[in-house]
Image 1 (cartoon, rainbow, N blue to C red):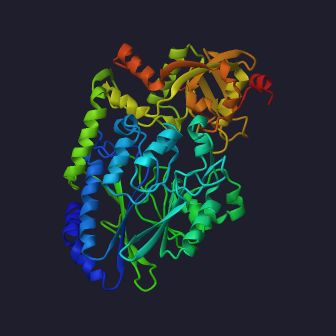
Image 2 (cartoon, rainbow, N blue to C red):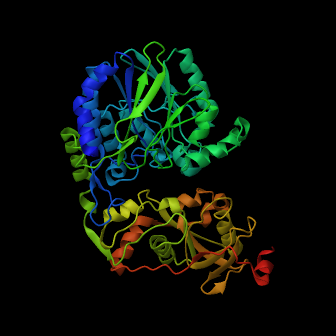
Image 3 (tube, rainbow, N blue to C red):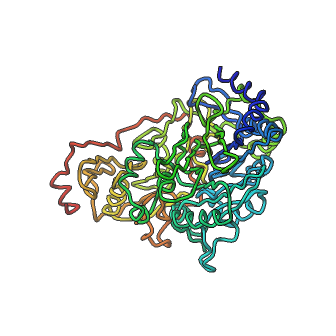
Amino acid sequence: MFKFYILLLVLLSGVLFARESEAVQRLTVFFTNDLHGGIVPQKAEFLNPEFPPLLGGGASAAGIIRQVRREAENSGAVTLLIDGGDTFQGTLVGTLSKGEAVVEYMNRMQYDATVPGNHDFDLGKDNLIERIKQSQFPWIAANIYDKETGKVWKWVKPWVIVEKQGLRIGITGTATTGTATMSFPDNIKGLEFRHEIPALQQSVNELRTEGVDLVVALVHIGLPYDTREGYEELQQQTRESVMGDHYINAMEVAHFVKGIDILLGGHLHRGYQQAWEDPVNHTICLQNYANGGNLGWVDFNIDPATKSIAGYDYAADDNALLLLQQDQFWPDSTISEFVKSQQALYEADFRGVIGETRASLNRSSTGEAPLNDLLCDVLCARTGSDFSFMNFGGIRADIKSGPVTREDIFKVLPFGNEVVSFQAKGSFIKLILEQKLSGSSRGMAIGGVRVVFNRALPEGQRVVSVEIGGELLEPEKIYRIATTDYLMEGNSGLYMLRRIPREKVDFHGILLRDALIEHFQQHSPISVKTDGRWKRDDDAQATEEWKGKFEF
């Protein structure tokens, strides 16, 4: 029924646009965010792990967009194609082409604008500059400043105005301030990421002075996972309190920046099937899932007299997000050929089998899991360390049981982080663990240790037991610790790692994903079972011996 509805909509869209144009002007907004290179077809294993349907990626999105554009040209309707950042880093095609293939796709699709996401800096500022030069569309960021000149970074625009069918649309946007702590310092050298709210407000005010009809904001900041909880928290906030927060969400932006009509969020990978509208400013907020599996599509009705939004609706099934199943949305042939050519160029050497796993290796972002354990065990083995750790966010995919390829490993670890190790006291290990359990932090993946913690205890005292090699952690004993160069920069809240002098850090000259590939090659078939190394027990209490060691 869904497929039939969409096909009928496309076939009759010219009639629909013609009828509605007498009363309102139709503005169709297509939106993506956090593509992470996901222009290639992919298997929807989240729908059916055994027999996953195929998602058509960029070519299926192109089939929809191009058809609607053709119909819009005949009816006086307007189409807008926008993106919320993190464009290329994450697939073989995206990463190995350094984003060139993805930007070329976006050029062919005639995107109207995008905003730099934090991962768009992963290959360095100079690489992003090359991608911006390549782009036939603007990159928008009102809050990225050049430290030397004190002006907006010259490679981005604080805002642009797009004129279509008599409608003047101002587009502004911001990168997340978190880029400053989530990127390697060399990758963003010379750049300042200013607070999003005042930067956006200034741009919106300038756009209104320019006489635009509508303002669209692209923000690489996520809408809350839960709309109701997010708004309940927002009601307790003031503009002053939000300005004092290091990280803000897109719902706060919509509430505290006046004059935005449509806002596209990103960064958190949490799609909104229906738009959320701020009850005060009436800013309409959109957000897609990640990796190119969906296309966002909302139709806005524009009052011809006031040029303001008179209402909006969705293409099908009361849903703003279309799951791009290839058998429902037939791929555009020219885009499909382009994507295939890029896959042939960048994926060929990654399809060979390098090992096998006897059971699925799943990850977890809340606690222990087989893949979490395996990665940290590889870190320990590779460096001869007593303790290893990784952030949950660095583990990006699961591995299915059976043959394993380099591509499978790449999907797990797409960011090219290097294995590092250093020596520190046991008290420093406890500090790391406590930091990842502070506030609402969920913890991390660990190796070489057995940890028991109690979240009901005060911060700084939640870790009640740590064993290394079967012995209780000693605060003054020196241990070898392994992690990645990304975390050594103080990312993921681990600011204390910046205290370690770089001359005392061993860089092992191998990427973690290459170390994992070698592990599969040497030890297949792999069999991993969790062993209780990360245990939450809200009844557990520290022993007197533990309290004495760590001065409770």
